[in-house]
Length: 109
Image (cartoon, rainbow, N blue to C red; front, side, top):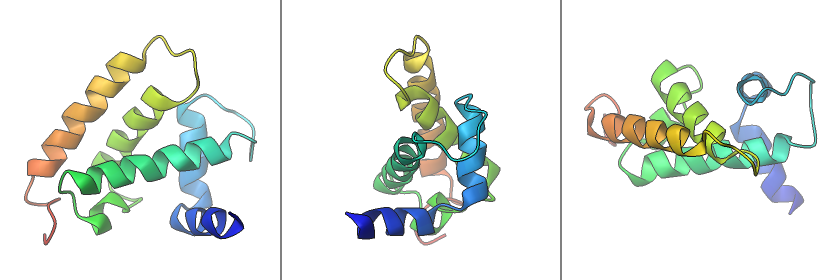
């Protein structure tokens, strides 16, 4: 289990994780919710790859379109009582689908 957490930590930079903390309105530094946020980021990346976005692109923390799509996923799936979850989920799916058909983001690009 510690190896899984270590791998996830290495795949997501501390600054990137901090940005996502802000997206879900967590204002403190490292929190006990970091593991949930990290898992959601990794799930979004895996879903992007599943639909044809290259793994390299899905993991590019500097790409604003990837970051925006992942943020919609995280906002949709974070927490238990989220009245806006369906709207965020629809936004993520639209962005994901657009990325998956863009030649700049496809596997082998």
